[in-house]
Length: 165
Image 1 (cartoon, rainbow, N blue to C red):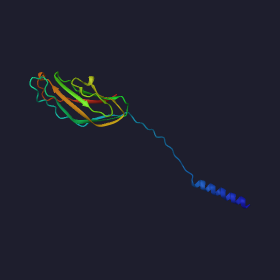
Image 2 (cartoon, rainbow, N blue to C red; image 1 turned 90 degrees about the vertical axis):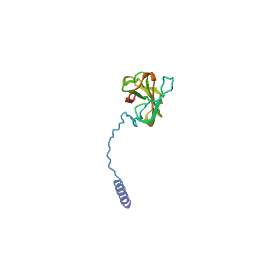
Image 3 (tube, rainbow, N blue to C red; image 1 turned 45 degrees about the vertical axis):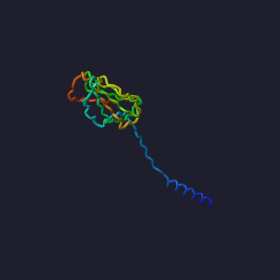
Image 4 (spheres, rainbow, N blue to C red; image 1 turned 60 degrees about the vertical axis):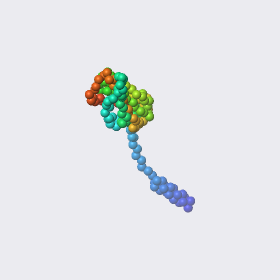
């Protein structure tokens, strides 16, 4: 009888210990999504590009440059995105505006003439951009003119940089 009582006490002790460690659970399903992100920003505007000299006997006036601005991008879409550049309106014949965008995530096209690149004919300036971010990359502009084109009064041109696939 002592064995039966001992076994009964042991069984009650086990059940009491199990009850002390009982848990209640609740579950939730969390839906996660990351949409395609295309972001490009420029640090500001370059300084005015004013041609004021040339070499006697040469139709090519002395070109001027500015590399004071930068751009940054973030993209998570694909390894085939690119940056294009275009002007709001083409420049007159004899005036040339070139742009060069540096890149650590893609392939820079080097110095690209955008004088006649408009929204319908934007020029590729960086290609094969990989997923991720590219911050503080240099933008360089070079403006040149022919003496035979004449003078150009102060003219603002809007350059549009587009991150696209």
